[in-house]
Amino acid sequence: MTKAIHHYTAIELLAELKAKRLTVLEVSKHYLQRIEKYNPVLNVYLSINQNLLEEAQAADEEIKRGSGKPLLGLLIAVKDNFLTKGLPTTASSLILKDYYPPYESTVTKKLLDAGAIILGKTNMDAWAHGSSTESSQYGPTLNPWDLSRLSGGSSGGSAAAISAQLAPIAIGSETSGSIRQPAAWCGVTGFKPSYGRVSRYGVISMASSTDSPGPITRDIADAALITSIIAGQDRYDATSSPKPVDKYLDLLTKKDLKGMKIGLVKEYLLSSMKVEVKSLIQNAAEKFKELGAQVEEISLMDPKYAIGVYTVIQRSEVSSNLARFDGIRYGNGRELFGDEAKRRIMLGTFTLSAGYYDAYYKKAMAVRTKIINEFENTFKTYDAIIGAVSPGPAQKVGATKNEPMFGEMEDVLINPTSLSGLTGVSTPCGFVDGLPIGLQITGNQFEETKILNIAKVYQDSTDFIKYPDQFN
Amino acid sequence: MDVRKISKLANLTLTQDEEDLFAKQFVDTLLVVDQLKEVDTTDIKLTSQVTNLENVTRPDFVDTTRVLSQAESLANAKNTYKGYFIVKQVIDK
Image (cartoon, rainbow over all chains, first blue to last red; front, side):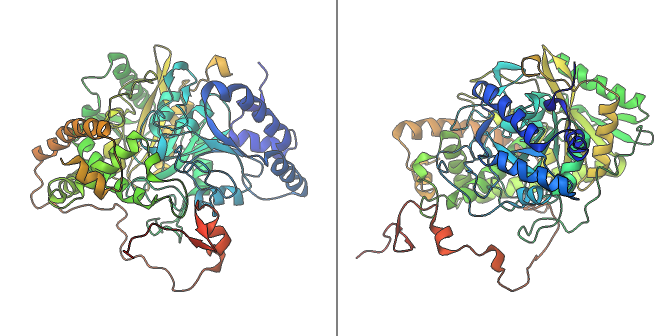
């Protein structure tokens, strides 16, 4: 099969554009045609950039003139909780149905400054509350591998955009699992940088102490490229880290895993997990050994406690962050919050209220410290830990009904790492019943370069990155 | 949990059905959270953030590049009057 435009990685596309073998205009028209054809089926995009073709032409002119911009002409799908000036931003909520942000998020600004063009805004769980996209007030995003199943979430639209090849690159955000879990369910690469590595400015806040923007891509090299652009300290986000940013792409030099020590977390092989999922993780561990790593089974705190910690901390921060939506300065009134948002605001208000603060919020903050300490100790010995991203493959449409803890149960293996601000990759590691399964490779805070290298070596020596025939 | 009282604190208006549903669901959720009691946290310090940064300040100057004009500030408001936001009356006449 000849290579179609949508089969190129971002790095390949940029090379084609630079060499003038493709124009940004043709790439844009190609993706617009695909979106027109497949978006009604999948519900990936909530809105498309109406100026795309003009911006594409301008980028082509700039390429002709010769420009050093690293992402010039690259089309990017952006999760709809990033504020984008001139493009609607709803966070998949009815409250922000007609909202046009007056300013640009730092992440999208950096991408635009690097020459990228926003293709459109992708569907998500409303306010990023969930792991399914079923809480979107504009309907769920379906899984390109099986249209009776969900894409995962909250960045489900961004993950499905890559899986169905409706964008070369997508941007997501993760509070706990919202990049890695949909990437796993859709069979693509998701990268969550450490908390504080990428600015949260202009991202509609969910849980401010764990929110982390990051890319969803076709492969690790693309993730490294995008992260090197969006990472870094931002004077508009006081929690962004002053640590210098590595040139992640240039540093993807490892050819094997010799000298690496990897921990296979025993507790993350849940008893409730399908045996086929467990064996894919065991296979991955064997692969790591083949590649020269020393893999040892390690023990961490039962992840069920992280669910409790995450539930309290996330709900508490949500109740505070969503208090600003009063329908006065922007958006509609609070009566338009969906059930999931109401539930989270209510529970967070409760756990922060007088008389319950100590029992719930303080207790959660203390257990959070214990989880962090445990990881600190682990990473003194190990370079990375591995496990499944999600207990199983994508679930059926409707799975979240009457399951107020759905997201927590699906993200049980991710919650501890997010609460600790760690960095991690979700990479395809095989299929169960024709559905992709994701492997998490997680490292210490600010060890992005190491984790990307490990994941790159794994991807280069395996053949699990596939795209569903229906959308190929 | 007094769901009605919490909804008032949260500035949310709930229907009776929602109150009943949430009351039941909160019991289930808090059962999961209550497992935290099994974890010994004696003398453990509390974590509210993971950056290890402290007292981050910015230079004390007005960054005019990010100041919104009055028109931009009001552009997304549903109810405005002569260049002002209209808010609910909170003080008795």
